[in-house]
Structure formats: structure tokens, C-alpha cells
Amino acid sequence: MSDEADTIALAVLEEFTKLPAKRKPAVRDNGLHEWVPLSGIVVKGSNSLKCIALATGMKCLPATKLPEANGIAIHDWHAEILAIRAFNVFLLHECRRLARGEESEYLLPRPSSTPEQFQPFIWNPEFTLHMYCSEAPCGDASMELIMSAQPDASPWDVPPSLSPTHPPTDPQPPRTNSNPSPPATLPGRAFFSHLGIVRRKPSRGDAPLSRSKSCSDKLALKQCTSLLSSLNSLFLPPVYLTSLVLPHSQFSDLACRRCFSPSGRMASLAGRTWAGGYGFVPFAVRTTGEEFGHSKRAVAGRAERVGGSNLAVAWTAGEGGKKVEVKGASRVSRRRMWELAREEGVRGVLDGGTYKEVKEAGALALRRQVKKEVWRDGLRGWVRNQGDDGFGI
Image (cartoon, rainbow, N blue to C red; front, side):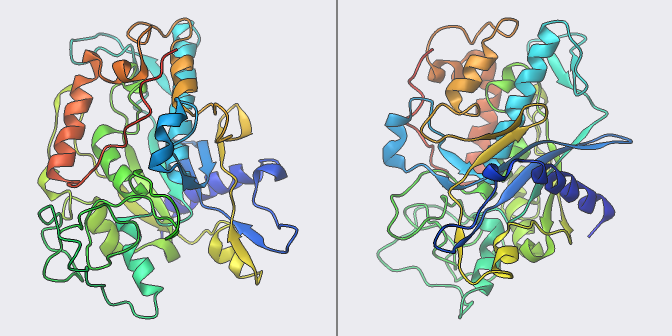
């Protein structure tokens, strides 16, 4: 625990309390008390600390539904991912302010440009970015916690019918069997004997499968591609997290070192840099004694009947709490973020074509190369979640 970790957590928790009741978990008519994960992005200056984006949520879109999404439906509304998307919406608004001649506290005009550093704006170096999560990120960073919650915490053997297809991803995987390679398809919470591997979002056994990678995997990737979306990478050079804050009860030092650190599955990327300001920039994982009042643990401590909330909320500074409508075009959806980026003053490569063509633009070639190398050398087994990028505006 550190004082800074506590203040980061409190900044998110206090901002959440300001949201209207309809944006928070409730007690259902049948007496079931809802819980939900919460994540937030905090900006820290020399004498300031402010939560600028937060989100709740715990669902994701089945892979079979991607062709119907049309840039509107959110693929992944786990709190961590929604918070990062909300942060990117915040940045797009800040870019628009600068483009219109207004001032931004967090962004600055770039004083000069080069072919590799072409973006018109930069992040204000006086500020660092931190993330609070009320739950351990699903996937590799939470496997020890899941195992310890089982009646038998021993690793599970992989059925012979699921033969491995990739080489080991953790040079010294703890608590594994003799063959730590991932199974033929991305697992969710299963196969405890396989640690340090890429996993899909967990779901009920009878639920349609999703190809959305776990929050652990996506956060590990962000240590290389930065917090910026592909759209924001056209306006800003990489912006990285400094720390990730988790409650004591949701922290496994072994799991987090294996998942995120240069000594774990990302070891082959340690010290690596790429053109365009990209590099492997590991964040510190810190713990806090502060607990979210709507966490599963807190709710279970005061109610007999507990269930997950279907509510997903995204909030950014200055915009108020707004529900993420899964069936409607949420402001953090691909379509709405593209529309925001194309507004007057923030134009160029974003005009015309399809969303896929924007993501494959030459200006994003360096970012694509970073992802390719991370998938090859660190997060081996990554499967791209395709099917919702052919829409246009």
C-alpha cells in the first residue's frame, strides 16, 4: 500500500459517488443485490490529482454478433476497457479544443514535426496517468486468485483432445504442468495449468464465445502501444500508464509479475523501443486498502443474494454520467469516436472510406508494427477480433 495508491483509488471512488443513482448497481425486485467492476483513469500533476474517465461493466459481445455491430455496438464493455475508451473520448475533445484555438490543460501543440512525429499535439509531460481497478483484470493477472477460490487450487490438466499449438509464453511459468503451451483455442478461465498465455474474456459455460481478449492481455499490450486508440494515435504520440492500482484482495504479486513485468511473459520485449516514440513501458502495480462499495466482496458482505449488474456506464470529466447503450451508438463506440475525430478542426486521413481503411492508413504503420511484434514475441496466441470494421461514415 502507498499513500499515492490510496489517493488514486479515492479519486475514482469519489467521482463514482457523484453519478446519479440510475447509473449505479441496484437491488432488484427479487431481492438480489447487484455488484459491478469499476475502473478509472487518473491524471496526476505536481500538486493535483483528478479522475478524468471512469467506467463500470462486465460483459462482452459474442463473436457471432460482430458482423452486425456496424461500429455501433461495443465489443468489450469490461470496466477497464470502457475506461480506456472513455479516456480516448476525453482526448478527442481536448484535441478539438486545441484545433479550435482554445487551451487544454492536458495537451499541448507540437512545436515541430518530423515524418515519424507527425501528430499535431502532444501530452503535457507535467502529468502522469494512473489506472484504478476495483477487481483484478480478468485473464492472466487473476488466475492465482481464481485458483485460490476453488475447493482444490491445484492446476488442472489439459484434456488430451486439446493439443497445444504454440510454444510456451512464460520462460519460467509457476505452478504449471510440464507443458505450459496454450490449448488449441483461447481459453477463458479454464486450464489453470496454463499460465502466462493469452485468454479470451471469461463467460458462463453456456454463453456464446467471444474473441475479445482478456483485460490482462489488453493492458499488457497497452504497455507497448500506449493508452491511445488508433484514432488518437493520428493526433498524439504514445501516452503510457505510470501505475495500475488494485485492492489488496485483488492483487497477486506472482500473477502480476508474470503478466505485465519484464521478468514475465513480456521478457523478450524488455528494453525494446520502436520508431514514433513507441516502446515497452511497463507500469508499476500498486495496492490500496480502499474498497469499492459495489464490488462483489463488499456487496456479498451485506447481502445474501448477490448477482452481477448488466449496467455499463462510461463517464469523462466535463460530460457527466451517461449510460453505455449497447444497442445504440454509444459515445465510446467506434462510429461515434470516428465521427468526433472528423469534426471540423480534426480532419485529414479520417475523411471518407471505411473504418478499416482508416486503421490501415500509412500514418498508423508504426503502430501496427508494434502490435505485430508484441503478438509475435510477447502475447503469442493472440487472435484478432475481426468483423466490425467495414462500415463507413
